[in-house]
Image 1 (cartoon, rainbow, N blue to C red):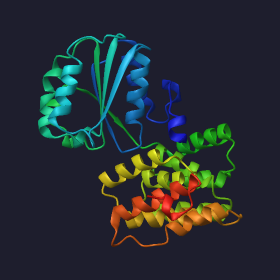
Image 2: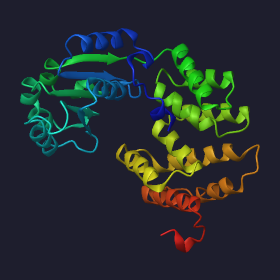
Image 3: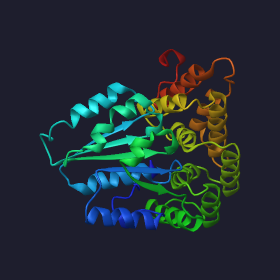
Image 4: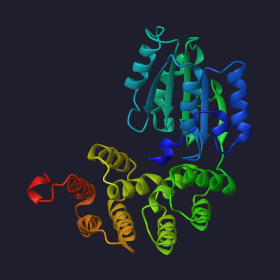
Length: 315
């Protein structure tokens, strides 16, 4: 996945939000706060900055990442409290990254208050949230708050061009322009779109795909799933993507149509019997079968990638 491969590991590589990055960099050089609250629209760099800081602290840092979409209860808070109760056996610091923290229950948030107020010297909390108003006020008052804004179109274009050159992708400048324009300042979405359209041969089809996918408001996870199905990604990776989409309550029929449209664009302009076989799997509507039907179709497509084309091998 290009957006993970090209995640910045230095402050200078971070795209956009220059003032915010400079503030964090200066804090790191002087006295790094033990609790940051990173806020902003999804895909603007909150988790990226948390990971960058975690790795910058020292090579001997133990990093624990929790996604509150999955682990949102008091038990998780108790686990964290126990985890930081004594210095790490290996390394100098413990970093706790709490992603999508607005989804943590109020009880779970309150359970962490004492730890955030009296944080041991060896512990750092990096809290990420796209909806900070859902985080209790007491946590705001105990945190250094940094708000990440959408990236400018020019900055998105420059980063897409850099990745295009680095990866030797056959994507023209006008396509990069279109992606940068349609990404609405969300760099992650732009990079996911770039990787997706690199599989489509004809430029007209690339532009049509970008227009359609952004018109219907498909998020980066849906676009990434389309790419996974086309590129023969292993089932365990596809399965995780489906779990996240199901938890986000994305409409399965809409996802099926996105996959169908993407595979259709991939085979236009070239002979590709393998992709055509996958496309056939997604022809049946999911209004009755819902997410189980989508999971079945994706599994069948993944099985096809492993060379098991007979129906008896699917389940």
